[in-house]
Image 1 (tube, rainbow, N blue to C red):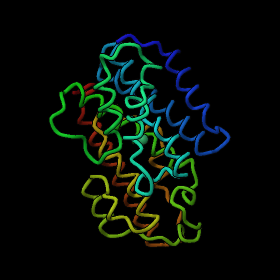
Image 2 (spheres, rainbow, N blue to C red):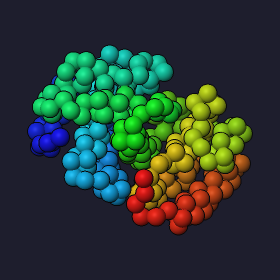
Image 3 (tube, rainbow, N blue to C red):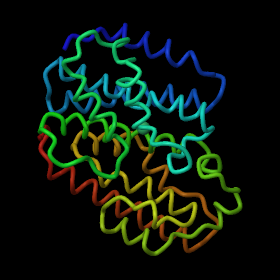
Image 4 (cartoon, rainbow, N blue to C red):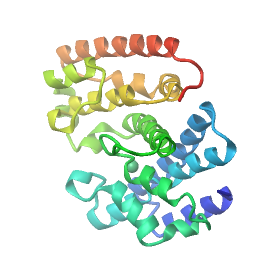
Length: 264
Ligand SMILES: [Fe+2]
């Protein structure tokens, strides 16, 4: 695959220009896109992958959320449960409507791109994918999760979860959600009942990161620590978050110590 990144950037900017960048939600997805592309590149280089493979990882990041713009225009929300599967919508825009050819002339990597994009936000990727396809799925999923930590710190939680500041400050963590956190895996959507549960759910995405470089970035960038520094007026919730923060630090230190520089 021969990728002209400037052409790809121009094609993305031209597509996004059809939507209102003055809308904070549109602007959020544009900045998320460029950050995820850069994170995909960094993770790919750490493995290490050859240059054309690094380009392919970067392109997965650039294209993964292209369906978000149509989702927002048609339904006014980024909540998939209330609208459509935005990853499937990205795949439809690119491979159904044919926009992929705005970015890339040759179709030889279409199958890998489509699979990585279609499954980027699913709970798990499908079984039976080739090792190479799995790798691009995991790179994209890791990069997306890392940037979700930032979004959850930079955008007021009241806006993300549609709750009042008062409800947020009073909120408790549901025991089953806390149990998932200490089992070191991400929290199932159906377990979450309170605004604080959503915060725990996002922090626990770190447990699903596949590559050591992804863990290093998450630890380094600091959004994770800010997210777990949850402002609350509920004394019990404050104690629960302080313990989770310490536990996450200990887990990350131990995991990173054990992992070699480049793996998989
Ligand atoms: Fe996404």
